[in-house]
Image 1 (spheres, one colour):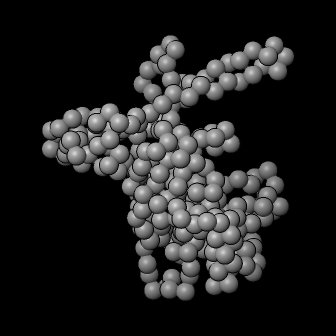
Image 2: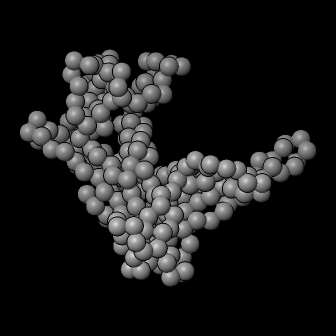
Image 3: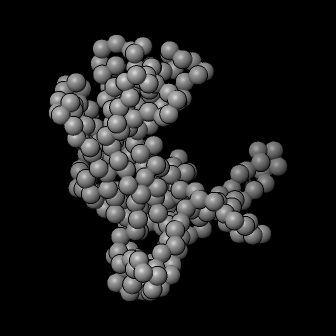
Length: 253
């Protein structure tokens, strides 16, 4: 699946800073350096204008989509019941074996789609991860607008921690990708004969709708990270569509 990912409210996915300047950004976004042509396309021979631009790692997208699906399927709630304080890790095949009925089927669906980390799960039944989330880079249109000084690729947002006793503010500056910037999103689904009866593509679609209804990156509860997929921008009732897809997936398991 390929579609545009549009930033609706400032997005923060943290990178690393080599230096920390006094009065500067406390938390920068992840970026890469490229050479670009005037039309916004990338030049791979080292000519053109060198710029630093933000991007969204595939791991950030994959991790958030998986987490939202595990919550919506009721797997995290069940994990808390069974594991107590040890709950919190991604669902693996060892945990799936402790489940019954539809919950076990949902857990196995998640594991088939997203895989499981090394050293966890049932090593005798290792599966190839089906969903591949590509790193998501700027569209050439957004890059061209930046080159023409029509948009910015970063903004500063000050966030304050308030001392409840002294009522003094402790400001912290966060870098964000501004609203309106667009990225080329791609997720690839590997298909095997053994998967023909599994609702893999519907589950991916559900995960993306859940993400659009939630937030990506840091500070989601404070207004950051609202995004929109062009493929789903005309859905009038997002929650109704999510419920419809969840029902379809459950019936097909």
